[in-house]
Amino acid sequence: MYTVGVLARRHGLSRSALLYYDRIGLLSPSGHSKGEYRRYSDADDQRLARICEYRRAGMALEDISRILDDPAEVGVAEALERRLVELNGEMDALREQQVLVVRLLGRKDVFACHDGMNMGTWGALLSDAGFSANDMRRWHIGFERSAPESHERFLRSLHMPEKEISVIRAMAAAPHEIFNINRDSGRFMKMFFKIYEGLDREGPGNYKAAKRAFDLCGNLPDRASILELGCGSGGATMNLAQLANGTVIATDVYQPYLDQLVKRAKEAGVGDRVTVGKKDMAALDFEPESFDLLWCEGAAYIMGVDKALGYWKQFLKPGGYLVFSDAVWLARDVPDEVREFWAEGYPEMRFPEDTVAAAEAAGYRVLDHFTLDTVSWDDFYRDLEHRLDDVEEALGDDPDARAIIDISRRENELYHAYPGTYGYEFYVLEK
Image (tube, rainbow, N blue to C red; front, side, top):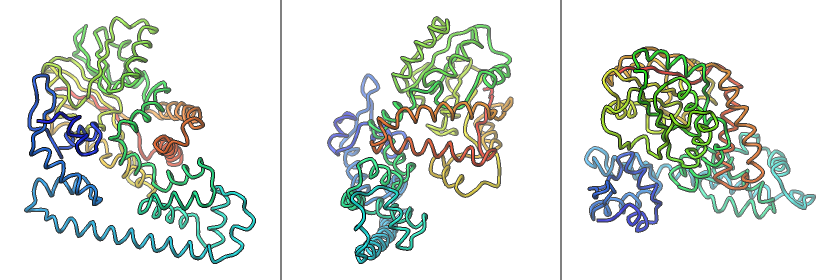
C-alpha cells in the first residue's frame, strides 16, 4: 500500500493533486490506516498511471473519469478522436502565428526604430500589420495555449522586459485558465491565500446581513453550538461572536488565516467564545448532530453547493440551522463578457430559486433567502483593489500571482460595469 505522498512522487504529482482527484471521485484510495490516513493499492497505482497518460495527451479530467469508470458507454477511441480535433485546431492556430511572423519579418522597417520592446510598441506593430485589438489577443492566446515555450522564446527575442513578458503571457493564457490548471498546486494556492490574507474579509458581507440571517434562526438555544466553515481571517466570525452567546468553532484550511482570526477575536474581546480548527469543509471529523448552527459565507462553492447541502446536514442537530451565502445570477439578460467570465470562474452559478429547490430536495425547510446589499460589494472591492495595488509591485512578475491579480481586477471591473447582473444570496435553512 502507498501513502498519498509516496504515490504522488511515483508519478511526479503534488500531494494536493491526489487529494483533489479523491475529492472529485477520479482516484479514491482503496483503504485507510488507523489514523484515517489514505492508503493506495497497486490497482490504484495502475489507475493513476493511466490518468497521467491521458493527461499528457491533454485530455480533460472529466473525460478521463468517464473513460475509466464506464468504458462501454464512453469509448476511448471516441474521446481520443475528440482530442485529436482539438489538437488540429491548435495546429491551425500555430500556422496563423507563422503567417503573422513572416508578415512582420518581411517588413524591413519593423524593428529599425526600436531599441527595446514593451506591450505598447508591440501592439503598435501588430496594429500596423492590420490586426485589431481582438486579433492581437486571439493571436497571443493561440500561441500561449498551443506552444507556451515557443511563445515565451518569441517574446524574449523581442528584448522585452521580464515584467512585460509576464503580463502578456498571463493575459494570453487567460487568468481563469491558469487558475483552473494550477489551483491544485500547493504553491499556487499559497500565493492565492497570501494575496488575499491582507483583506479585512475574503468576500463580501457585513454585520447587517449576518444579523438578518441569524435572527431568522428563531429556535436557537441560548448557548448555541456553532460551526463556521471557510472562516478565512474572521470577518464573519466576529459578527457571529457578537450575535450569539454560544461558542463558535471557526474552521479553514489555511493556518495564517486562523492565526489572524485568533488575534482579532482577542482584540474584540470574544476570544473566550471563539476557537479555531484547521479543517477541510469536505472532510469534517465532528460527531453527527453536534451543532445547532452551521454558517458559511461565500465558501460553499468550493465543494459545490449541492454536495455541501447533503454532506453538512449530518452535523446538524434536529431542528438545527444552516446559513450560507453564494454567488448567484440576479438578471436573465446578462452581457456575454460577464457570462463568459463566470462560465470559467464559477460555471455552477445559478439563480436563487434553483438553490432553494436544491435545498428542499436535500430535505431542508427554507426559512428565507435574501440578496446581500451592494454596499458590502463596494467595500470588499475597494479593500481588494488597495490590496492588489500593494502586492502587485512585489508579486506581479510571478505567473501565479499575475493570474490571481488579473482575475481579481477583472471581476471588479465587470461588477461595476454591469451592476445588478450577479451578487450574493443568503439562505437560511432548517433541518
